[in-house]
Every structure is written in C-alpha cells, then in structure tokens.
Image 1 (cartoon, helix red, strand yellow):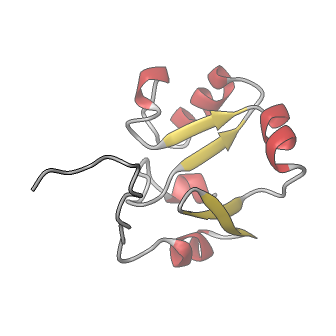
Image 2 (spheres, rainbow, N blue to C red; image 1 turned 120 degrees about the horizontal axis):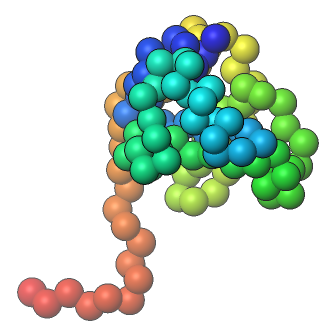
Length: 109
C-alpha cells in the first residue's frame, strides 16, 4: 500500500529498502508497484534491496513496514509505518545537510 502510494517516486531525503528473497523478486515487486527500475537503476532511484538474512543478521527481527532514521551514520529512531499518511508525515519537509566531518585534510587558504 505504501509503495503504491509513492507512485514510482521516492521523496527527497529518503531511501527505500526492500527486503526480499532475491533481487529479481524485489525488482518484479517494484515494477508491479509503479517503479520502472532495473538492477542498474536502484541506486539512482535511492532503492536498496536486502535479503531477509542480511537484515536479521544486522538488525535482528523487525516488523515491516518500518522507518529507520539515521543521523551522522547512526540509527537514532525506528518506528513502524502502518499507513501512507503516516509515511508522508515522516518525510522531512526541509532537508538539512550537516558539514562533513573533518577527516584531517588540510585546506589551503
């Protein structure tokens, strides 16, 4: 229901993660839901595909659909998203980009 509500577009500032048994199954499901994606289009359209085993190994058991908020590379919040309305309520209306971390690179002035 949420995927169909996106009408083939991932809002700015959001990445969509599909948990599937295979990439081919995920691509089929995405195409059926209005996303015209192939394997090479996934990153460009901000879509990632993971197997159930990868998610379980890295995050444990999860309930889907799930929104995970990440700040500075760390998970800060996770919550279930039972409706399209609640999904869009989580989409940031103003994107904020933090300064990149200083990685020891000196800058000439």
